[in-house]
Amino acid sequence: MKSRVSNQVLYALYGAVAGLFFPFAATLLHAWLKHAPLSLHTIAEQQRTEDLFWIIDMAPLVLGTLAAYIGKNRDFYENVLNSIPSDIVVFDKNHRYLFVNPSAVKDPAHRKKMIGMDDFEYCAYRNRDSKFAEERRNQFHIAKNTDGGLKWEETIKDAAGNPVTNLRRFYPVRDSNGHMKIMIGYALDISDRKLLEEKQEVLIKQLQKTNRQLNDFSNIIAHNLRGPLGNITSIVDLIENMDDVEQQKELISYLKPCTESVSAVFNQLIDSLHVMHDVEIEFRNNDLATCLKLVRNSLDLEIKQCQAKISTDLSLAAEVYGPEKYIVSMLHNLVSNAIKYRSPDRQPEILVRTMNEGEEVVLSVADNGLGIDLHKHGDNLFKIGKVFHSNPDSKGFGLFMTKTQVESIGGKIWIDSAPGKGTTFFIMLKKGK
Amino acid sequence: MEHVSILLVEDDPITTILTKKVITACNADTELVCTKNGQEALDYLSAQNAGTLILPDIILLDLNMPVLDGWGFLDNFRKHINTYTKKVALYICTSSTAPRDIMKAREYQFVKDFITKPLNQQKITDMLRVL
Image: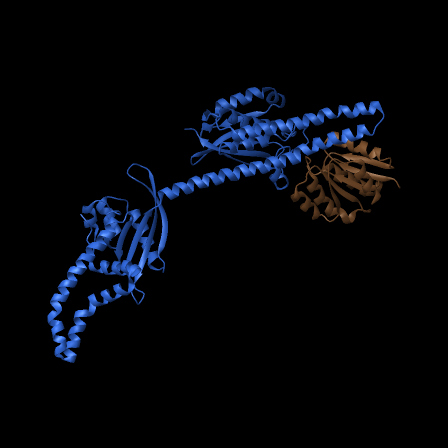
């Protein structure tokens, strides 16, 4: 069953559609339909000319012909509106349905029933949440007070559960005094475009990430390899300009730590590249207590030596989702740092705990160690080769690798610290599935 | 050339040894004092400025160091620069070539130059010549 269009709607839609294609003809027809019989009578009464009376006599014939013409055109426009594969609805000024096309509501019975209803009544009729009606009412009021109407995107799920995105618009049609007569609402299914945009966005993000990694990589090479390579150059220059064999031997002995340093940075970079591009790494649920047990075992000697007290509170989230070796490595680095940078004034205390944050888990490792001045070192904290305490074991690789691992699996890492009080590292990861 | 005192602020032991050797190879009358980070260097300068010892003629400052890095040293040095009894030629001596570091160094007007490692005889000779 097709939707029937009321005259009011039809006139407006005539104006809108016909105006696009043949504005002059449409205006004439419109004016004639509304005023022609009256005007002819008035003219006849005023002029009283016999010439005009035959026109009045002929009026039923003319009007009959015109009615057939209009009926034909009405069917034509209805057909057009009912066949457009976009949702089209028309509201009166009180936000009541005047017209709904089959694309907007498929069921002809519903379509018929809803004419004259507002969205609140329609929601009640269809047993739907009235929030939808409230939202639409707000949008209606906003659109009513605009010249160009209101445009928005809306994603809903279809019967099969697939997301469908529509570009919706409320467009007010006004009379010559600027009063809103009707509101035309229409929606275009832009799901395909949306899907492409989303794919494009993912690609752009990947590209930005790769670009950032490339930039970081070149900075790391510039900063961290230049130092030891520069030393090798100096050693070679000095040896070339030196005759004393003993001094030459001494200089050669300095080459080893330089090459070791180059090698360490190089290996760390290769490892980080593997982490960044390891697409085949297996994700699984990781029991944090088990991971921590592995960390305790590997740091057993250090923990005993400094009598570190490690406590846990995993009551809020016991599992995280990710590659096991990264989760263990992250915990290892953070606990190891807490021991390495302990305060000489107190027994090291380390607390590992979890908190829920929506679909994610925040894992924190807090210590009562030396702490770090974040105003001074905050920017460099996770950079390769950056050390902040004069500890001979510090290489500046641990936090760099931890950050690389965290970010490679879509997590985040941040720090809170105060010099002399301690440090807390936070890692946001996916909750166990 | 008169006796020249140099303060090296550098955390890498190999770089420190090599800098000593390069300076020695210049055959100039120099004295080198080595500190491992910005804080050690500041402590040394404040002791020197107490009047018992002589301030250095040249400071060679690395940027990437633990405890107090080169930038932290420069901020502190700037605060006390008017209290120093003698003008000191300060050179940043780093493996960084980052434009951001070079631009930042220009904010410290007392920094004489931004030198990229490694230091060689020519660079040291130039520093001594313009002293």
